[in-house]
Image 1 (cartoon, rainbow, N blue to C red):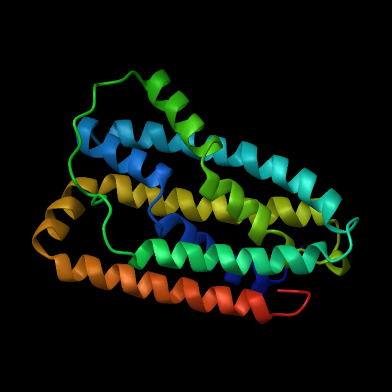
Image 2 (image 1 turned 60 degrees about the vertical axis):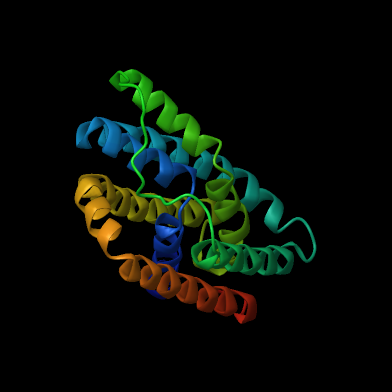
Length: 211
């Protein structure tokens, strides 16, 4: 099993993933603003089911390949650090459509909301890259079954993102109104998150074999 320190650091990375704008967040916020909290929650269940499918595939495939290819761990460790830096840049880069802008969307059934949420997460390169690039450095054969470690880390990520996104969906309307009149708060959130992700990228780039 991963150590408590490893789980804590990975949870922080997962929170960074959840808080970085991407297809999942855009879809969930859009649905919550256009169709209400219930629609946002159904979409969230679909998204996290899609993330679970990707996580299980990554846990099986990555753990098999990681220790069979020389230098694979170092390559993925550096790749993970670069990916986190890219996430940090997405937080602070200028331009782009505001996440909290209301969007006109047709009313959809629960089945449709779930299916689109699943597809949004399953085809989301941000989620796939997170598992491929950030999983391996946190896996340590000395701590037991590597596949089980990967599944535990994946569940930490999914639970963290579910909680964050659930709060996001629940408060979408109020948050949109708040940020619309307080752009300084929005800018501060972007820069704080971007800085935190950059620091985590540095930690990942220079850490040893075990997280």
